Length: 241
Image (tube, rainbow, N blue to C red; front, side, top):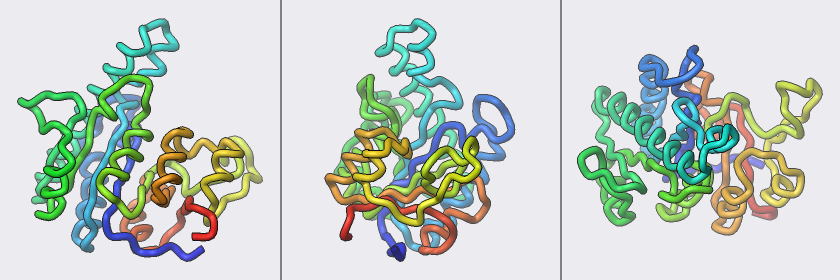
């Protein structure tokens, strides 16, 4: 399946993408590198929203696994995503890119609340909008938050930057002969539990006909290539579309 060119994109990044060579926290050099990729995409004329996970600082499910109350741990994870969003905002604005952070948890001294119409105006003015704090409630992942924001903002596609170059039949880091898909249907992803995103996020994108594009964000220049319909990636879509 040929990858179409999309105009309005939601880019989902894991918090781990901001770590660089470290084991935790935020590496400013790595953040600047990703920000440069995002700026290059914006300069190509794309309208961009971002959602960044918080796993480089704190992961709610990991905290719950160690005995913390799940809801409390998830709220801590949401705050971690706000920190990552502010770091990305800082890097983009140092490059001259106007950026707004909107948080699902109100913190007016730090960023805006999530207001869809305001976010629409930001995009219309050429700004990048970074959505933080997931959906504002525990028990939902940032993948689900990304799918929700993509639907709300009427994005043409959700691009997920990972450490692999697409969707495989098994974990390519563990299974040497795992098969990579150039394209695959939402229903197959769910039926085979391929774990590209959590099931709720995949189903939300399927029901709203928002293709998911999985690509390697760690390869320099790859975001611009994949946005242009080139480069290596997998597109997850509704069958027959």
